[in-house]
Image 1 (cartoon, rainbow, N blue to C red):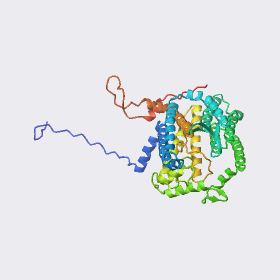
Image 2 (cartoon, rainbow, N blue to C red):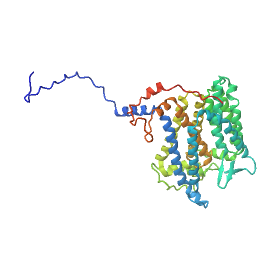
Image 3 (spheres, one colour):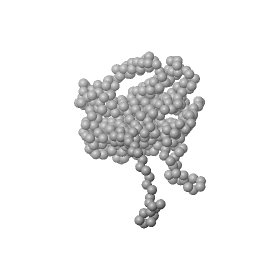
Image 4 (cartoon, one colour):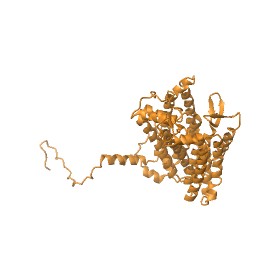
Length: 453
């Protein structure tokens, strides 16, 4: 064997492999799109969107309530943080309700449907009893709890309708009854009209519109035929036109759509016009947190119905678009949960909650932008008001529970290891391989039925 100069045998070099044509490198934009699409398709995407989006909206809402309510509190000879402290207390209670709802099994949610509906109807009827119900801004929809604490039972009526109607439609679907129009409408529509009647006795048409939107959302999810859907919509529209025509206040609000002057066509459009002024003066990045001018007595209800206008003035277009993006993500996640489940109750409940939150957000923001009449509904999770915040956060807990109950999401959560806490038996923690989301989907057990009452 020949040797090298150093006396060592020469190193045998491996033969060169034939050159293989490399695939063309992807466009950076296309590669980013591919990664984003893979991340978007993961089983826990809806879970994170619901949890993160709702918490961000609530926290930003607390900040804006503190900023927008200081002047109002001082004008009422109250501490500047008065409304913020009440909203913070409601947010803490709501967070507890969210946690409880997110950990409750679906069977328990269905079992609570009828008690919640009965309690909501009782409280909404109690509002009309003299000496118990109280009027706020012309609407007889409140019950005083003593001191500065009040409760609006109609807000809990939204949650009651979603839970009860979802349980009702799910049981009828299991029995193959939704193919008959009478089973689809009865008793869903009569009970909804009962709730609407109790609400309209107090004059709160804004909340009545939200309940009507929930009803149509549930009928659409139940597969109502077009003729039936259009028929119910026509009846609701006719009743709404009669209620608007017979009320000078509602006619004045309708006349303020698109108004640019405080007095438009004989109607007082002060609130609508100053909301536009607030948005217009914010610019791209706003005047700065706490630097709003309109909240100094020019814009009524700056911390409740028109908090979005103050957000636009202080945080600018960037702030308002961020709020819109959070609501859009929350709505998408709710639709995703409703579309991927095999449980009819989960599908109806998730669709009902999503319809509730998105419809209320569209009505509130549309009124601030001057595109819709002012309906007097708060921005969900954002505006001041504990009565609106508590049932909404419980409904968010429902969506979180449904997102966690998805088979692929359960498999993904079960494969996770806690970063802190107990170590596994044997001391050493085995190395984790790459996650195989498609494999988890194949291995995930089939969806379990939530059962009936």
